[in-house]
Length: 86
Image (cartoon, rainbow, N blue to C red; front, side):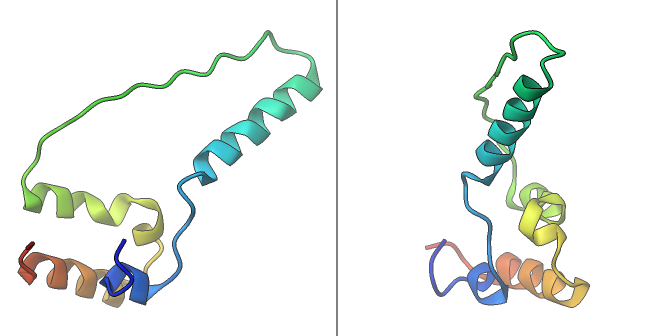
C-alpha cells in the first residue's frame, strides 16, 4: 500500500505472513497433541476477474476493513469509488 493511501491513514494493517504464522502454530499444536496423522498443507492459486463495484462490495468482508468503524468504512468505499486509478 502507498503510504498516503486512505487504508494506511485509517489504521494499522496486518503482515502478509500473519496467516502463515497462524497456520504454523496450528500445525505445531497438532504435532504436540500426537493424536493425528501427519498434517498436509494445501495451497491453491486462482484468479477471478471482477468489476470495480464487485470488488468494492467485498472489501467490508476482508480482515482489516471488517474491523473499521462504519463511518471510516463508508469513507474508504466512497473515496475509493470516486478516485480515478492512474
